[in-house]
Length: 298
Image (cartoon, rainbow, N blue to C red; front, top):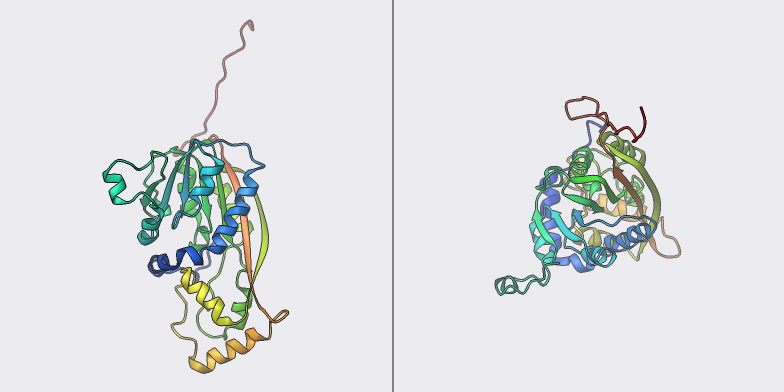
């Protein structure tokens, strides 16, 4: 996968925005919860019983209950780089409960870290779950390599991310000029290439479109702000050409109304892949498996 040289995301801004989004996490996480349910429906057709699951980009821990219901015996680990969201993910594991030793052993373990440098040993988990996290990386390859590293051979990566048509109406309504008004999202085929290059086998990917509708543009922008999901492009403009620019954007978006509502397209990409036994060592030497000769053969 070749990342365009003019495409980069402001990771510091993303971390700060997700930290501020903690105040609205319950209300603003409706899209992630819906996508998580659709991911879980896909799990019903996959035979896999992990003993330990990593939720990469767990946010406020909204998916832990779903994962616990699907895999009640599995240990769950959550990683996120926005500490205010992780504090919400602690849930009932308050300071006093931990002090009194009443926290359940089945409560998720939480780690504040970057997915590009996971604080876990090699082959530590049997499943990596990642819901709408990869779309916040300009280059997903380092994170995908880390997910591959921490998986056992035979382990599975299950993920969702956003595709290029996400917020296409907003992108079209914004005035042209210097800088990106809505940051770009990675194509499904490029993600598939990343999986294969990282060493994953049998990748399966599909895409669907979810259309949200709003009475006005302010409603959409409010949801994006509360979710911490505003433009993170390093090339983003710092203003929208003043009041005139906003007026033109509102008028352009208003022309897209369908049955009185403003549409907001979300292209969701789903995928899963398996960690296969390596064919080469890290220094490039081929791995050759020897099997004992069956008893009785000369």
